[in-house]
Length: 474
Image 1 (cartoon, rainbow, N blue to C red):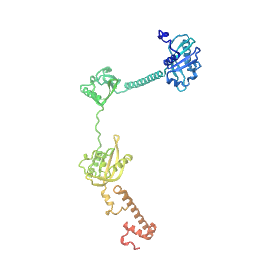
Image 2: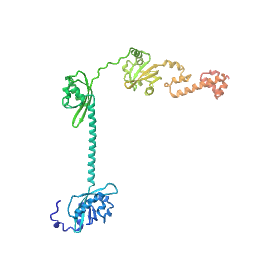
Image 3: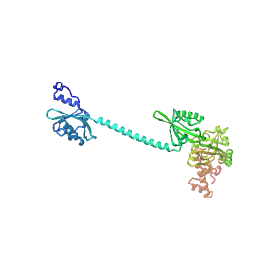
Image 4: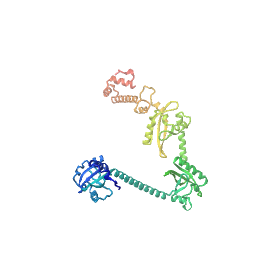
């Protein structure tokens, strides 16, 4: 500390009010204490601090040490003792309790004034500093947690890297030098396990070296490469390499995993019986179509091509089967939903529409098979136009004779017509049953049915049970 050289010359004219302003301006909180340590006056320069000590009037007339926390009271005694002895020491942090949260830290410096032992304590609010200090502590703890987590991750990586039975290398993407190698790689690649520091080209034959350059270029572009042919110098067996690019700081590194190449497998062969079955499916008179899980055609036999008026199978492949069904967006959806839920569909009646718009009645049975995780569906399509023609009367105004015939018409006529025809069938069957019960007595049959005889005769004539000229005979 360096004091003024001539304070008596320049500060002699300062009165008490000016001194009070100077003291208040020099500190966030200034406290005047008498020789007994009792607070006689105080001033706040900080509005925020004055708001925190909104009930500070009770300080007056009480010992200064009673207004601070218990652990800060010895510091108050030390500052008053130093002021009485006129010795100056560094400031001390004193904490004031508050009823609204954490204690408020204040840094005080106490100076004696006057000849009667008064002491002025200049205080600086340390809350901003304490907040900053707490942030530093929090950041440091966060760094320590992140560092510990990274150490744990690195430990797990090291354990996996050392224990994996497959040869694994860490290679610099630019220079292609081997930076790390696990025990399996050292046992496979280098004499006496010394492979770290070697270039990747030094471990491969001349042809593989060119493939390695291409692989590295692809890795830098795409970030990874899978199942690249890799042949080691001095090793007869073929291998494959899988690589993944990652960054470590500013360096680009490649994790290279080596594996023995799988021996070539022969294509699966089918038995003679299965081959014969496939030939029969190709030649049966019913259409047969194989689709994927979305109903897109994979294969079709000649009968289906003839039904759809297609020249060759290529015209059908890649197209949705819905293109040739009678109700687009309806029939195929119903078939696929049933196949997914039950695995099969039997005797589904619909219409097939060929390339020229002509429609024919068909009946579809289908089944599902799992092929490599995705289901495939087979559809057997049979033409039933002749059967429908035989079931439907030649007279277009005539109605079906049974409910079974009405079921055959579902999909070819509207629901309104189906309901009307079903009502007529039930009406005709009821009249026939009543006539049978009454021994063909039409008057009694009308009474059983709850209709008049004239109404019964009209209905019988409409259903073809009597001729028009016989009405009114009975």
